[in-house]
Length: 200
Image 1 (spheres, helix red, strand yellow):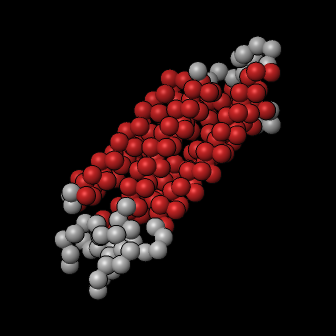
Image 2 (image 1 turned 180 degrees about the horizontal axis):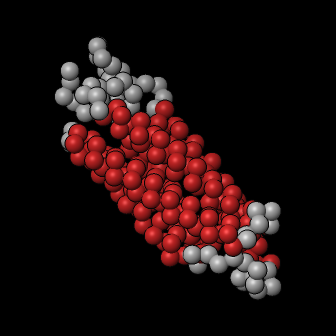
């Protein structure tokens, strides 16, 4: 049983190390980031056009939003991103306990982010924002897509935490957690942009 927390790039259980022709985590990271950037910029651009064409902003029938509540969710997302960075540092230092704790805390803060935004959604639904309106459609698609991304990242973190429960090397790229950390950082920047566009 190995005492190594993370494997070298391309390491296999037996035999000399050999680098894979393509780093899957790097490929998925750049593809996902490119697609998400296009999607979110498109919807944010539509929102800007909506605001520019409105006689006055905000419209009188626009439901009350809660920037303070969503601001706290942004702080939770920031803390989740920081804890993933700590997990990457702990991985390189071979500190299993710190890595496990950081992964679990990041899941807690990302869950808090989703929970606070769920409260915002519930409040908006209760105030009568119709999904079929232009603003309602852009708002729910933009924020909903973002929430799906964070939920997917949480599932990936959980799978990595389950892996750390086993004291053995695995044969995939050791930088996959680092790629996830970079992706969450990019999501944080996107969420701050969404917050600035919609709530400020």
